[in-house]
Image (cartoon, rainbow, N blue to C red; front, side, top):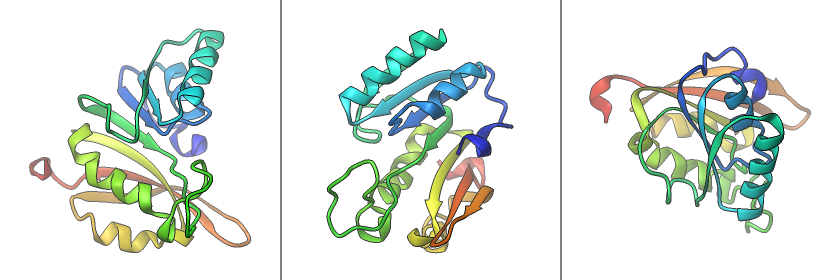
Length: 170
């Protein structure tokens, strides 16, 4: 994901890193001049990211939130690297993605239009295990392009770059 966003012009962009985990994506954007909010459902993860931000001497805003539940406003850029492995039960919230590995991704896409500015960009990591084509079909309000892909022995990871198809989509 970092490779996929490395050429993106973050300077001055209001950026949200949803489900930040280690914080690497939001922290990277902050080092590139973005105005960053990171969120995660795990309070401990959020506190760790705050400490790393201090060490890096970058300013970030942190929010403990289940996806967009505590997020207000709209952003120029939204980044989401979801738990995507298909699972029958979500035991490890960092990797288990539920049915087809898409439970959180589907919820993210449902609420994304409320939080992404009309001329904004979102980055979403998906696996070939998630059937990206069907997700794309269910969200005609967005244009999807593959920003980066990497093939492993049992799957292909894709970072999709999403933008609204037109300004009347919101």
